[in-house]
Image (cartoon, rainbow over all chains, first blue to last red; front, side):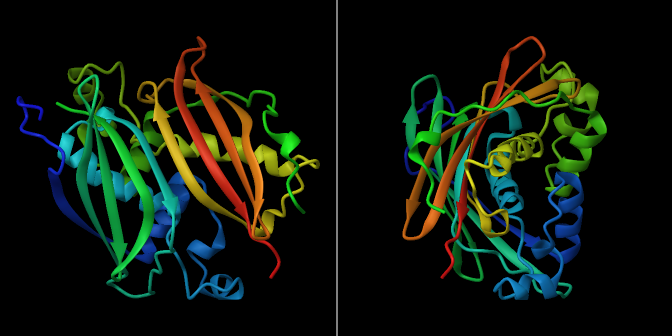
Length: 139
Length: 148
């Protein structure tokens, strides 16, 4: 237990729900430089066997990381971050887009005032990232 | 094409310098909804002890993924680019990336194996500042799906 901040193994982070629309994918493509058409072109996405346009895995990773930075209040406290891209987030061509739900739980307290947080990231009831782990410096 | 294990340990020449700008950090932060003032406002960043605005934690991919892709253009690796998907990603931040950084990326193949007809290649990209200070280690696992 980290007595100063009341954080222990099992402490849960506030759940975050993020909406992803096609416009968000276009904006991320420009910002990241990843212009793969499967992230904005329905025809190309279907041609390669996808159910439709999907979010960039790195966009999902960035959004999921916000649950941790919102919790610590300090983006610089996120020391390590890893994910496995398990299942694509399909983003329909409508106003609502896709919904991403991010839950986090402190899995271990580490030396040097750090903690490991494990994330569970789902969309349409399915896990989209696996082995999503963050090492943070605790406040 | 099955990956050759002898590729493990292979390093590529350092990339050209990537100059990190405030506007690019703001653009990326806004795109991922990271609206913390340390990404957007120099005064807020300085008040938090940073020399300039800092990048959100996954910004390193802007520099590192292109660097990792040098392995795909290596004829001895022989991965079919059109079949490559991003399997895993890891960042180890030695310090936050900040505006004004002049980053150089050096890529090394950490692992290469074939599993069930798929080729799995792990590229480690070390991002260092101009003074050679370690900034971020970005590890990308790329999967070239086998022809089914």
